[in-house]
Length: 136
Image (cartoon, rainbow, N blue to C red):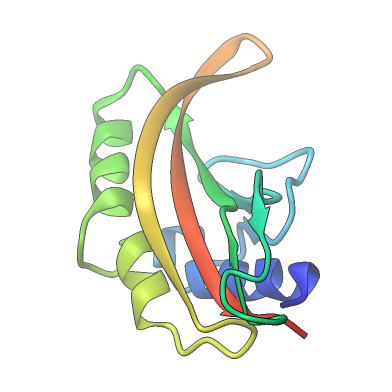
């Protein structure tokens, strides 16, 4: 699998969520306006999980910077992004995508956290992914 191509394809799949269209990046972009989604680099790359140069497994994240943490609208957006279905569901967008750079991508876990930007605290959702594909 090619790291750059997989990260770009993850971003393309997430960009289909209407609230994130045009605000999804296949890399950790330094300056964004909420809501926005960023694909992070994998923390771990497990190579050759099968014989030879077979199965590889990665664990990148999709980090969604949602909005100021102190609004009801933020809770509603967070609910839509984490939902199992619906147009803004990140898990549904990833599971429905037909992958060309890997075998599949699934959301293993979703965590929420404060994300300070300047003097404002934003809510960020971290969608922890599992990416599986073949070696070269």
